[in-house]
Length: 243
Picture 1 (tube, rainbow, N blue to C red):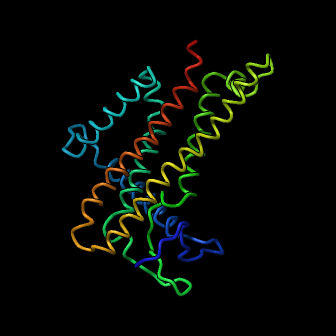
Picture 2 (tube, rainbow, N blue to C red):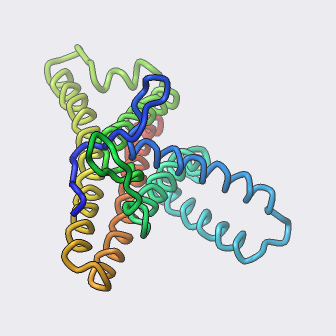
Picture 3 (cartoon, rainbow, N blue to C red):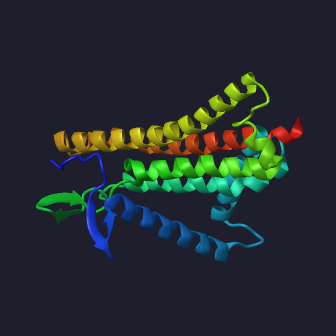
């Protein structure tokens, strides 16, 4: 049975920098998405085909969802690239991480066989990085929308003890948001990876198929939740201008 490791395993080093199997698959996902974006851009036409029509319908649905949450079509179009990128990247990483055969390609490392590919979200560094990006960028967008000092005063306010205490709670909630986002995604993906490994070892033929479809669904839901929580955070940080 393949050893289950909580942390991503190093597969090689590049100029002294260790490259883990999760990091390597992250680079593969980046290459796939960048290549696909250039390919889709070249295929765009005035009269859409089936693929372009499907993509346009998905974009319209996502924009309508963002419009409902943000209350403004202009805001939805402005923040769509950020939220959609987070969703597509995490979804592709989750789906590619459990793609049949991805975890079966093993290499020798320190007298142990380790998978050459591993789901990026099964590495806490990946989920933590995305959580930090989400929280930091949404706060920057809030500063750009309502102004630096009005946004900063939500966290540090010495006008009276009550506002100061509320500001501390707001600051703690932002830190808690990073922990929540990173561990929720990591826990679900890592647990699914362990489940598939154990089930495949005990019953390696058709029994793992229902669990595989379950993990496909979980990967989709987790990517959607991460993107929606980022969207809600944007809505909260940029809504002050309307008061």
